[in-house]
Every structure is written in C-alpha cells, then in structure tokens.
Length: 221
Image 1: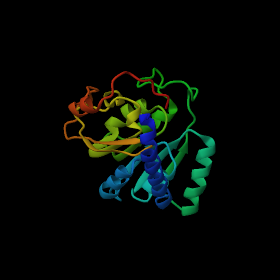
Image 2 (image 1 turned 120 degrees about the horizontal axis):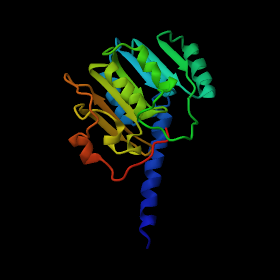
Image 3 (image 1 turned 90 degrees about the vertical axis):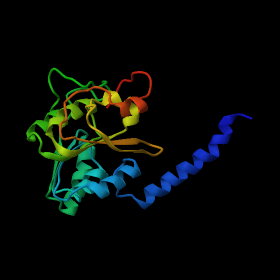
Image 4 (image 1 turned 60 degrees about the vertical axis):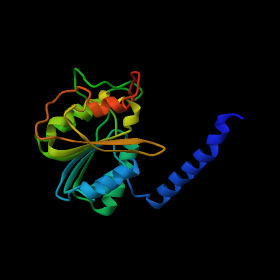
C-alpha cells in the first residue's frame, strides 16, 4: 500500500475543517486563524496602522484601529474593496491604489536603487509613529525594510506567508522577538514586536535559525 493513500483522508478532513472555518469567519483576514485571535487580543483602537496588500483585512483592521493606510497595486481589486469601505462609511481608512514599478511576474528583492512607489508610501509616516504594520502584498522584503524605522517601540509587524522564505531572509532584525506564529493549510503568519533597543540589523535570530528552512528561495511577491 502506498503511504499517500493514508494521508488522503487526513488531508480531506483538514481541508473540510478549513472550508468550514472560512464559511463561519468570512469577514476575517486571510491570515492564519491564530494570528487573527492574537490581533483581536492585542490591537488597540487608538492604534495607527499601515497595510500593504488589501482585502477583507482592510475592513477588519479598519474596525480595530484609529487610522489605517492601506496600499493596493491591483486596480480591479482596489475598486472592489473601495466600494466595500465606502458602503461601511469607514473614514479612518486611507485606501490607496499604487501601481507597481516592475512587471508583476518579476522576482522582488529587498533593496532597490530606485525605491518603488508602492514601498515609498512608508516614507510619509514619521519614524516611531506606527503601532501596527501588515505586509501581505508585493515587494514584501522591501516593504519590511521601509517599515522598520516607522514602527513604535512595542509596535507589531505582521507578515503573512512567512513559509515562503526562511525566516532570516525576511529582513526583520534579529533583536525583534517573534511574539506570535501560527499556520493553517494555506499560510503561515508571523508577528514580530519592536523592542526598546532595536538595532536595525538583518542578522538571523536564534528563533529564526530554529525554524529556518534549508535552501534559498526567490520571492515573487
């Protein structure tokens, strides 16, 4: 008997459970459910946020923050979410369409000689001004680097799909502790917190080394 057959019922059961969860929580962000619960417990309604990559999360985070800048590169998707925000009357969400400066299929890198407009949105924020940053769109490593000085001491950095790269390649300083990490069938979500003395270094932290996958990967988003 092939072992693959043994895993099919388990996979089917997990998939069914995931689909059921989605149906029951259709308004929640497309991140790991554990990360959703963490945000429910830790987000402050007086908080200031920045989000790269929009969707259900934009409305959900908008309900839980004082103000939110959300950046989207897909015009069709932006139009859809914009209608939803307008329908709910969320004046605290500054929702922006910012097209990419590179072909969408081109692999992204942490550093650009000319910073993409999509990433440059972070420059509008003062240093140490953001309580919460979400990186779930394009140019992810570059967005993280742009966001680091903008996050307040004690502020949170949420990155979705961290299973796509070894943790040490996400450019988060080794001094920043991981305060939450969880996964489901579709994604792994990791949340870091900015410590009091956060040296902006990209060294791999011990926690990252433990969880780091072998091999270097190319990031397409």
